[in-house]
Length: 172
Image (cartoon, helix red, strand yellow):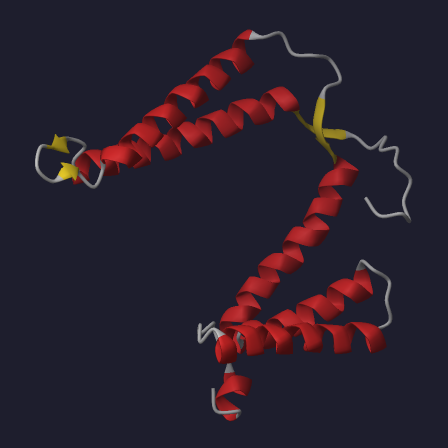
């Protein structure tokens, strides 16, 4: 929460803690099922000379995830819900979306113009919108951070990151 807003949130409740516990437990159980199924496909036995098969460790991680998710699901369904226990309110969810939507747009734009240009724009706009800084500060900081990251990854570490047309024009 930024310093510009009141810390009390009396907006309507969107989701309860119990509902989220059930949803997350079911999603994790499905994920565990995928991990277990693929591990079984790869093999989960310990081979005497070779050691563990490719699916050995993922299988047990998936099994632990499935069991712990099942316990969470059973507890969430069996326990009495606590009245008024809120996972997220309408106002709080709006704040989450205010950050999540620009992030999704950033990821889409990144695939078109490259990570460095997208990051410079993202940082500048984030500073302007959320930090209330003027663009005259946000743009140089965004460009500066992207330039430092470019030098660090592309020049010093020789780790190529997704690039766009600007980097191609500059010969990278």
